Image 1 (cartoon, helix red, strand yellow):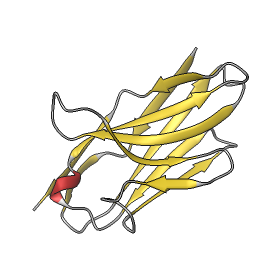
Image 2: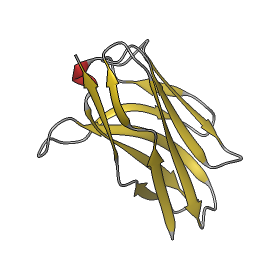
Image 3: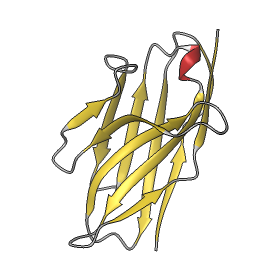
Length: 119
């Protein structure tokens, strides 16, 4: 069984920064693509924020390009999201996502961490 645990969320003023972490633990044979998603309001769908492949290729939502940076430490099975120049519209629950295993791949989600940006 695999578990993803996010940390680093909180309350910050607009223009501030936060760094999210997601630690993966358990039976991890191969850690493939990982990503951050967010849900900005209850009932809304989760939207992609950023993804990173096992080869460190990255992709970002247009709304966060230039402000957020996704990275990973494969030795620690940990994913990060550095969020700078935060805006009130970044307020959301942020979820970690991991694609694990080979050749059969499984998708795992963390429990989410709240990020609130005040104006």
